[in-house]
Each structure stands twice: as structure tokens, then as C-alpha cells.
Length: 268
Image (cartoon, one colour):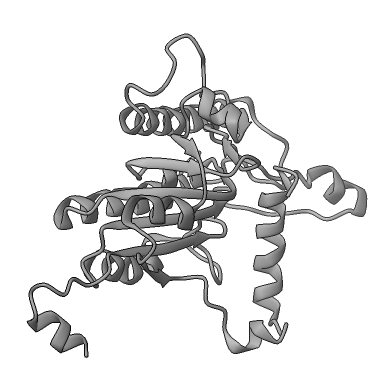
């Protein structure tokens, strides 16, 4: 039937929208994490298969690796240019930090009234165990070649030079992040407001400061633009058989704790 439809010029096929789900933390490792290597096949298929009118990114991510965020966003932009297919992002619960970096790869960003958007900043978190080791009488022995090899060792007291060096790295990453947002949201951001403090905005507040383009959901907006017969081809978001039955191995549990900690920062 499909081949017959293609052979008859006046029978037009329904327009298609490729829907790519980007859900989870952004990391180079970890089961289910979003990264450039794991997403590459899915993104390439989404832009190529069925000649879509639009690639829609459904984003639900609290962020993660700045490098992977940059790589994924850059790949989306390259594919969009190569195939001349526009990209629209739809935020679900959250597109914060690296999650918003991904959203910025789209030509338009839409969100729900309660979606969390923003957190344009960079953070480094860790623990210090040096006092605990002293209490239990454990001596740690570390030998290095290169004075910076043990930088920020959690088993040693913090050193002012290490803190200064780390803050310099974070500032560099923050500058790169800001440049991405200013480029992709050019002409849409207010000149009299600093949006790069790590603050978050909800729904209409995000719209007022130019971080999103509107409040709406995927299917209603796409049907409004392409008609009720628009066809959605969905990619991503599938769970394994074990996950469907609630069975997880130890690595899955640890990855889940890490992901839960990222979402908890935004009250989710």
C-alpha cells in the first residue's frame, strides 16, 4: 500500500515529526546516561528516516557533564544543517544546566507551565575524608611525579592553590556555557538581566526572560502546525525487559542513586 501511495503523485503521505527523548543525567558513563556516543545512532536515524518536517527533542534532564552536553548539542546542530530539518525542544519536568544546554541546540524551546528551566552555571561537588582518617588512625601514602597530580585529594586537607585552580576551570566552563546560550538565544534574552547565575525559572517566568519561546506540549503544537494527521516517529525511552519487571543489578542501583541526587537538587 505504501509503495502504491508513493507511485501516485496526488496521494500525499502524512507529514512526520521525529520525536527524540533525551531523559536522564548527562555523563560519559553509566547505564542509561545521555552521551554523544550512545545518542549518535538514534539522532542520525531521527534526522534521516522518513524525511521529517521537524525533529522534536523531548527533554527531561537535570544536567551533568559539560563536555557531553556540548558534544550532543553540536551533533544536533550539524545534523539539522546537513538535512535541512529544524529542531524544536519540549521540556518536561526539567531542562537545567546541561539539560538546558541540550535544549539550546533547538531552534525553538517550549515548556510546560511547571517545567524547571535554566541553572546556567557549573558546579563541582565532593567530600573530604582527612579528619575521618585521623580519627580512626589510618595513614594514606601517595607518591606522585608532578606537583598537581594529587590536586583536590579528598583524603588530604584542602589547599588554597587547588581551590584557586578548580575555580579557574569552573569559570572557563561557565564562559563556554554562557557563549552557547547567548549564541543560540540571540535577540531573545533581556540585556538588563543576568541569566547566568545558576538560577532556575518555572514555566511562564522562563518565557518572560527569553529562555523559552512558549508554553505548550508536543502533540498539540505539532498538530496545530502540521495538521491532525501528522505522524510521530518516536526514538529513545525504551526500557529493557529486566527494568520493566523492576529488576536491577548493582550498577543500575548505583546509577539510579546518582541520577536521583541530580534531580533532587531541583526538588524532583
